[in-house]
Image 1 (cartoon, rainbow, N blue to C red):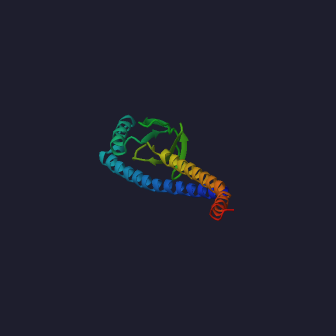
Image 2: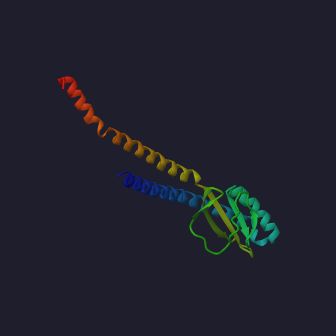
Image 3: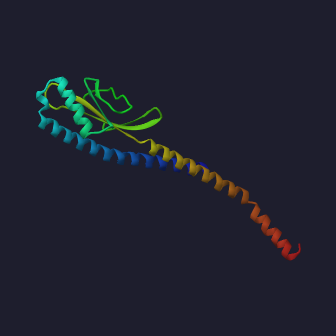
Amino acid sequence: MLVMSQCYSAFMLHVSLKTQLAQIYAYESNTFHNKLKELDTRMRNFGIAETDTEIQEKIMQDGIRHYLGLEYAVYRDGEEIYNPTPYDFGKNGDSYPSYYEVQIDGRYLLIMGSTYDPGGENTYDIWHFNDVTGIHENSWKMFLKGLAAAFLFTAVIAAGVGHPCHSASSVQSERFGK
């Protein structure tokens, strides 16, 4: 019974973890795409498509720093042009999964990426991450607490199985002198 309850608990914690990650992804994805739209509007208003590559990169760095923040990295043709994060996203390509989760240096990261084309000859790969280590740690702690409670409960029941009958018979013998 203990094993079955712990298997069920582990399954439910896993489902809960995946649900929490999906909710975080939905929020982060919405924020990511809104910030990209705002960046695109500002860059197009600035006329970034008509500038040369060197100036375009400087404008992109400033725009990303201002509109996206510190949890973003930008690459052009696989070359990093802006990355205040402690991570190297060095991957480029035409298609990205909606998001994926990786473990780097003991941290769990939810990562999403997008290709950005401001017009002109350059395209950029923009990566965003969210550290979700705390969610994994909380799930693990919940499992361990449940396991400890199950063992404690089992120990209390096992210790008390024969004891109540023995206590009842000793009380009976004390009352009736037997």
